[in-house]
Length: 76
Image (cartoon, rainbow, N blue to C red; front, side, top):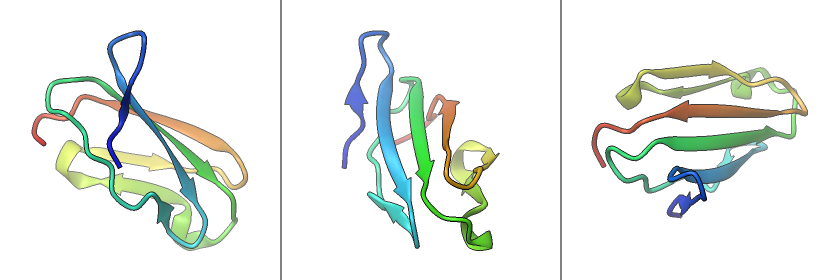
């Protein structure tokens, strides 16, 4: 899935966290700020953090809540 452009020149996507990430892959353009919203629909310990090491992202995800992660990808 590709991230959708937003009115404020960002790319955005919503990811559902429930036994995995859905969608599992998001295509982002390099150099364009990204806003990913993770909607965690479970309390399993395996999904308590999201890690995107390529971009230095590590963010805790609260159970049964939405968490926004923002960063600018440096490569595609």
